[in-house]
Length: 297
Image (cartoon, rainbow, N blue to C red; front, side, top):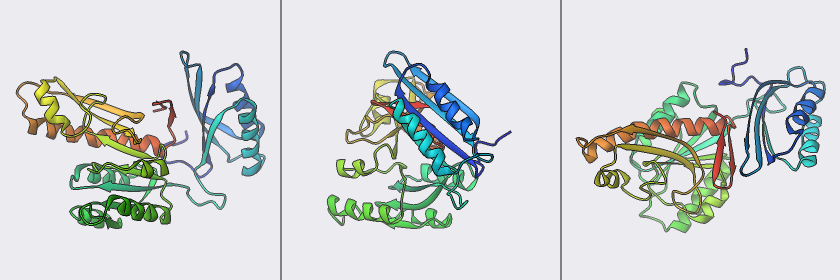
């Protein structure tokens, strides 16, 4: 049995989105089989109301009868024929080296999400390379350094936002970062910054969106007397807290809980939800359409 949590070097993942029509599954299966690839996992979804088809295929190229370039061209031909949007990723480079997505974590002063991501990465739960941590305060530097991750500080009270983000983007480009994770980063990113990483910035919001957007959602929830609180991981967009949702979870609360109790319970949710969302993205399990997602979990 193939272990999909630790991809073998010969595995590849194909994500597909297009208008629904007959023959899509057969066409993809035939092109892969025709080049000697073996499908080891496949999942699909059809949004009948929107008329959209989505599929995630994991296949093994160990016994492929053609080279990678020829296989890519064949998939591209099928993609063009059916007007598909496809994304193909391999577990290794053509030279046989592991091909992991490169990740940067942005933080402020809250440490729970950062600790959780670093521990999950150390335990091998996240199939990516944690390259650096960026903070707008120096407080969490010792945590990153303890895990051997470079820490960079861009103080929010020193430089103007435009200059600060320009320097951050330059750093991310130099490190060839694929994914930015906002692990309770208490700064609003500009539209320009977000547009540099479309569907590649994951934010954790301490609320069950779309309820209680913006600041102090636990205080808002306490004032409203809710019986459930939640956390939401979503892709960042220029519109605050309205990006496509990747993962959510909730926990029960009662009239006996103070704001501090809600914050304590919420922090556990934030860690779990963010960790799952990051893992889904790194494993190529997420497809966006409109302002929604299909998550092949």
